[in-house]
Each structure stands twice: as structure tokens, then as C-alpha cells.
Amino acid sequence: MAPEAGRAPAGVEGDVPHVPHMLAQIPGADYVPAQVADAEEELYDDAEPAVSLDELAWLRPLPWWRRPRPLFLLPVVLLFSLALGVILAPRMELFLSMICQKLQVDEDMAAGTPPHVPSSVCRRSVEAQRSLSMLQMKLLVVAGLGSALMTGYWSKLSDRIGRRRILLSAVAGAIFNDAMAVLLSYVSADRVPFGAHLFVLGSGVEGFFGSSGTVTAMSQSYLSDVTPSGTRSRLFALMSGILFAGIAIGPAIGGVLTKWTGTLSIPLCVAIVIHAGIALSLPLVPESLRPDAQRKAIQSHQETHHRNTRHGVVYSLCQGLLAPLRNLSFLLPRRLSEEERPVMEGSRLDTLSPRWDANLLFLSVAYAVELACMAIVPIKIQYVQLVFGWESSTVGYFVSFTALSRMVSLTVFVPIMTKILHRIPRSSVLPQDGAYSPGTNVHLALDEHGYARNEEPSSKPWTAKERECEQQWKDRENKLRLIHDSHMDMRIAVGSSLITCGGSIVSAHAKSAGVFLLGVFLVALGGGVGSALSSLGMAVLPHTHGAGRLFGAWGVLSTLSGSIMGPILFSMVFSRSVSTAPWLVYYIVALLQFVVIASLSMVRLTSVEALTGLPARPRRPARRSR
Image (cartoon, rainbow, N blue to C red; front, side, top):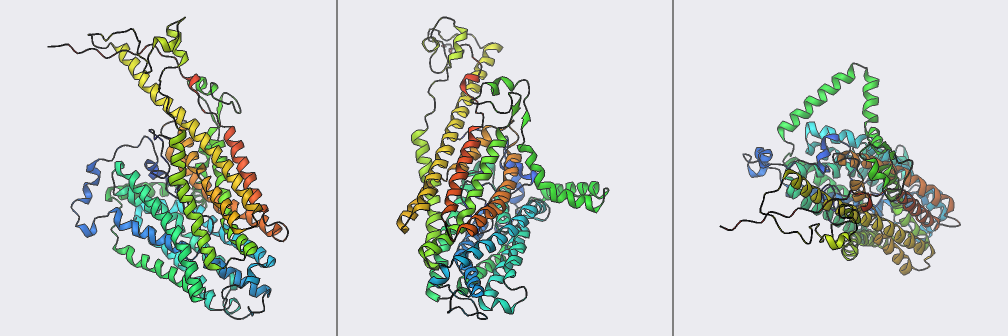
């Protein structure tokens, strides 16, 4: 997948990991940030204007301690992702312990006492695991709804009050949620108001403030504010690696702390200390928002607010709540123009009608279904507790293994396989070019660059017609690479889905931990679906200025599917089948992967046969000797 204009290679600009609620999924470099602010469309737009040095001139007069730099923010990202990983397993152990106390499945876990590390009897309890899956569903749905409704609001608000304050509010929401967990780890649930429902309250508050989705979006905005466009890709890739590192290392640390201390409280306290440290250090991080951009955002907001208030408060509130969902209209089928019809009619597959383009709709369905599959991650933790009886430290190692496997897949396996399988066409000449030399083999008449083999350079300058022809050949070369890369992306997406399907079936039938981990690793190797879909989305955009709207709409889908619909689906299936067939959730993943493949099969990719034939390419005029 050679990077082209308008296409973001996996793991770089436009492809920063989106980290939903920490229990929803292990983040990967193939997830689009849940950021729907239209003002930040240039982060993804292939027609992005270059950022000149003059735009960063406001930074130069500032002293070094007040000058925003990427290195001021990247440690914050590392610590935040590390805290998410540290409490992943201990929080689930805390949930399970409280449920076992309520159900009285273990004599050692008496009611009315603070919860402690669950016993093997508790972990293997069918009723306890069923209740845990339903509790997780509530937490994820509440947090997902809050994030879906508020992340766009916080993103736009950051354009007016700055990135740092929004980051601080998101961290404050995480601290509140941590505090609820720490409280219930020291005190019995029947001694606090609302009991175990404090977890739901904590998730709701964290989701309201955007949580990790807002942290990711604000970090992306911060880096974009203080760097020219030529260096963003490198920094976004570095941010992706830092997020991976935190999520991969954190669960192992949390598991070890639980095993060494024999209590669930210590890892939870460590996480709240990390978040508190971030909150205390954020005021020292210089603000990145450019003053003139802030003034324009404030003025635009005031004008919009003035227009909306004329229709009443209810209208203004509805407009704000429905703003994220309006981005989804961009994904609906669109009517083709007269100029586009010949190209689409020559595509690999006709869908709906030759007069309609539904590529983005089918790609979005595949993207949403793929993200829904990621919601199985917390169910996997329950599965290994139930089937293998793994304790907290082992669960931490398992989560770290899952994250590291996905990182290896996206940073090593997918690039290597792409390099091996990707072969850029050597010749720019197409069979339809033979129309300009009837009765001859076009490849005998033209060389691989399109020049006539028997034509010598002329000493005369190019005519206007020859210059136009040369430009057409240059455009042809770009289109050929884009078409070839899009077909390659399609093969990667379908192949990755098939690998994920096979790995899920292996996990479902695994009788030993080794075979199960093999299935998990195979699923991780199939993690290139999201990156390929992002690349395909750029390739099938209806015009060159829609990348920001595309990723904004996919940001909404990532929250609705990955943090709401997916958790509901897998929690309901697991809770109903846990006593008889807990492995059924893996077959649900396999089935959803076939839905992804079916959706991709409906996408119409432009073929080389649809391109217009060209006459022989004019040779450059020979230089006259002096």
C-alpha cells in the first residue's frame, strides 16, 4: 500500500488509535479517533494546505517553558494509557468479587465484608460470570452513550478555551471513576449509597467528560497545533506506539501488583495516583491553541449561538445533541454525475444502480461490524477465568499478550506481507491506448512509459496540446497506482477477515491454554482490517475534500458500534450461553467477519479498463548544443 496523495498509511496521520472506554477493547492503530469537529478536517484532508512557518511564528517569541512542544504532551499520553492498562484486570476482579459475594457462591466471601481477590470457585461460577457480563454491558453502554454525545462537544469547545483544559476535564472524569472503584474495594457495597451501581455512576461521569476518546482527540489536536504538516505523520506514529506501549505494559503491572499484594485496592490506587499526577502536571504544559484561531472559533460559536437562540432553547439543545449524527449522512448513497458514470460503470461490481454510488455505505457497514467484533475483549477475560480459572496476574499477562500480538501484527506482519505481495505495475500503457494505433500491438508501439518506440525527440518546444497530453499521462500514472493500491487494500481486508474468522474458531474449540493463545494470536494477525478499510475509504471518496467528513462520521460509528452495539451483542450472547456453550461468542465473531467480507464484496472498485485511452506520450524536446 504505497502512500498516495489523499491516503493515510496505517499507523500514521489520520490513523491514530481511538481508545474507547477501557473495558471496551484493546486499542489498535486501525481505529479512527472519535472526533467529529468539522473545524479539524485538515487533519485528515488529502487536500490539506501546507502549514507555513509563518503560522507557527507566534511560538517563537515565547520562552522555552511556555512554548508548546510535542515532548510536553507525549508523556501524558503514555501515563494515561498505562493507567488504563493497570486497572483493566483488577477492576474486573473487583466486579466479579462483589457479584460472588451477592450470589454467595463461595463460603470464603462472606457478605458485608470488603471484596477481595476472587477464588477459583468464584471465577468458575456460571452465575457469577453471567451477572458480570450484564454489569459490563451496563457500564460500557453508559460510557459509550456519554462519549457519543459529548466528545464532539468537547472537541469544539477546545477550539475556544484550549486543549489543555479539555484534557484536564477528561482526566478528572477518569479520576472520579477510579475513586468509585477504590471506595468499593475498601468498603462493602451494602454500606455505601447506591451500592454496586456506583460503578455505573462512575462510568457515566467518565463518559460524559469524554474519557479516553477525548484524550486521544485532544492529543491529536495538540500535536497538530504545534507542528508543520510535514512532521505530523512521524509524531502521530510515535503517539500510536506510545499508546500501544501503555496498554501492553499496564495490564501486566496490574496483575503483578494484585498477586504480590493479595489485594485489589493497590492497583486501583496506583491508577488513581497516575491520573492525579497527570492532572497536577497538566497546568504546567503550555497551551497549544493559536490565539487567532481561538478568536475565530469564539466568533463563529457566538454567531451560531445567536442564530440558534432565535429558535428557542429546545431547538438549540436538539441541534447540539444531533450534531454528531448529522455526519453520518455523508455515508449514504449518492447520485453519480454525468462525468462519473462511465468510470463507475466500468467498475468491478455494480450495486444499486449505475447511477448511484454506495461504496462509502458498504465500507462503513464493514467498518462498524469490524469494530463491534472488538467488544469481545472483556468477554475473553471472563472466558479465560471461567474455562481456565486464570487469576489476576495471569489475566494481566494475557491482556498484555493480546495487545503485543496486535502491535506485532500491525507494525510487522501487515507491512511485511504488503511489501511481499504488493507489486506496482511497471508499465503505464493500457490496452485501450491501442485505439490510437489501429492494427498494432500497443506494447510493441509504445514503451512502458507511453513513449512511441520509433519516435525521436524533437528540437521544437511542446505545443499546448502536447503539454496537455503529458499532464494526462502523469494523471494516468497516479490513477493506476491508486487503483492498484485499492485492490491490494481490498485483498488485505478480506484476507485479514478470514484469518480472524479462523483464529476465532480455533479459540472456540481450544481445550488447552496453548491452543487458545494460538487462536488469540491468529486473531491479532487479522488486525489489518481497520487499516485497509481506512485506506479504501480514502480511495473511494467522491471528491478530494471529503476525508475530514469521512473520518468524522467513522468516529461516530466507532463509538456507536464499538462502545454500545458490540458490548450489548456479546454480553447478551455470553450471558445466555455461558452455562452450556460459552464458546458461542467466538462463532459470533466468525459470523460477523463474514458480514464484513459480504459488505466488502459490494464495493465497486474502479478498474484499469475504465480509464480513457491516451495517444503516445510526447518526448521532451532535445536540448540544442551550443
